[in-house]
Amino acid sequence: MRVARGGGGVSMHWATHWSYAPSTDRAPDWREQGACRDEDPDLFFPIGKSAPALAQAAEAKAICARCPVLETCRDWALDTRLEEGVAGGMTSHERLLHRRRQRRTAS
Ligand code: SF4
Image (cartoon, rainbow, N blue to C red; front, side, top):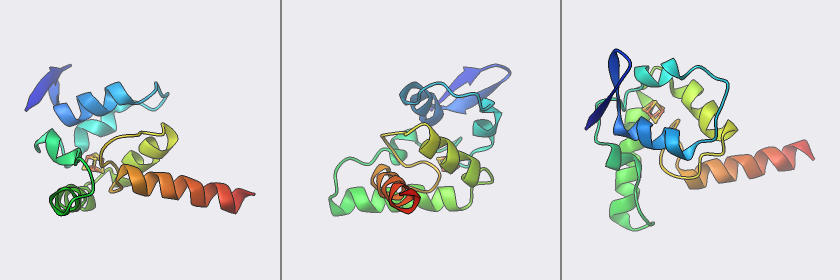
């Protein structure tokens, strides 16, 4: 499932992530290099903590693991406090824990 944007296309995953995220100064071009670009966007939004949802998150994270823009995506997800979905190889809960660790380290 893709939507046209500019001369190419971005997956609905990114269209959805874009709508969740506050605006940022970072150029959006890196998103078009994401390994998730042609994947089912629903895969990146597991619901709940059931075994199937955890397996779904693991599958999404496996795609992130081979993504050429993993670090940029992770920074973006953390910087923008992205609340939903798998991004940058982390679930929303993992990002929350990461931010808490950072706060503890900083204080
Ligand atoms: S790190 Fe994951 S969510 Fe981010 S662009 Fe790559 S595949 Fe997509």
